[in-house]
Image (cartoon, rainbow, N blue to C red; front, side, top):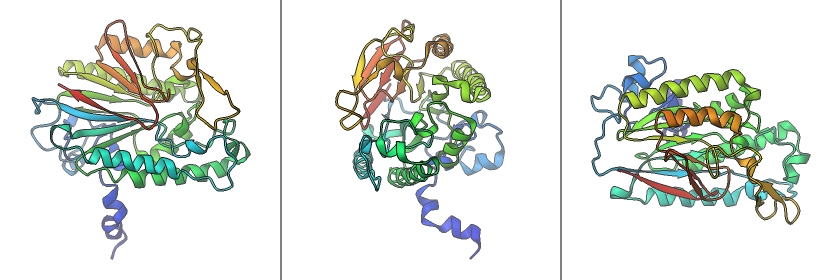
Length: 348
């Protein structure tokens, strides 16, 4: 049997068909039940179009479900987070795996009108990106970079194994968080992530609504990859303009970092409140400044100007590890999700 045939016939090939890097490429989502119009494919060619069903006349650009549709948002699955703060000879994330399994089971059990078209995991898929040597977790502090890399790779493998259990008729979108690409993302850290999960930013249509999925970790700190920041910024404006020109029913934006917690003009030093760390994170009483969780104003205002100009309906994110909603001055909803929770969004 040829090597190619072995790969095609392998269990992993079938498990990961239309998942991860096999679904997130050419800056769009390649999924059989959500056919995209050809103009969305970056470097579009007819061969890849046929492979992903793009030759169909009706695509998700059209609204074909008059009763609306549902999608699921979750974030911070963060395999390894629950052992933070503990010295461990053998790091494990069995609790996080079990939580994800239950989540996948619940989503798969949704039927009829409640069944979602897709699930978006808004970053921090895993916990141990190798640059986190200064993290609170004691076991991270003593590990060398290559050791943290090994842990990271195993966490990624376990995440993919569990989430590949999502039913084949439900699409899955995976976005990166700071624990996936670092607090100061670089070209190398981003490429490390994309080698496993595919494009770190992409766009796709679903029932006439336009979905913009971002690597907004780079908005939190673009200094490690300024060229990639500028590249994504240009792409964002192009796609937002395209969505409006094509009469998108809604425009939804997904990322890891909340753009703001109270209002879009909040200054970086305006949030004086603190949030308590989860049990086991550092000494008793450990807290985080709430300002740590949002995109700095210098970079946020660029995105907000675009979102206002093109009338974005809502933004979804994680990172804050609390359920919070806010609204911009022009009515855009900003929703941040608690770790391990998932929210079902109904779109009319």
